[in-house]
Length: 148
Image (cartoon, one colour):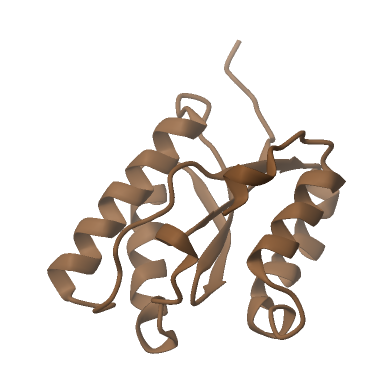
């Protein structure tokens, strides 16, 4: 028997200290780099988007790929890419850690639309507010000190 999986992830992480360094003009290049990393790991990217201080990735992982390892590879690879291409001049790296949530495949289209509309969404809500809502929605216990 082969391995069959259908696990839809939303991965969220921010810039170090939530610094607003991911300027809009170069985000598409960053997202293309991250898509390449996912593709090289045989993961399927459904949507990637973000704002100045954080991003969201909607993906399914290949069964041989560990989530923590994938996020590490995305952060390391994108940091090198940002430095090499000098995309974001004040970028100081990514935050330690990440948040990841699983969804049923039926939620995919709504989730993709949610991530596509990040800029509009963040006119009324901060990253911290959004993250707390996601943590509560998914029943994840958290310590407030790790959200700073």
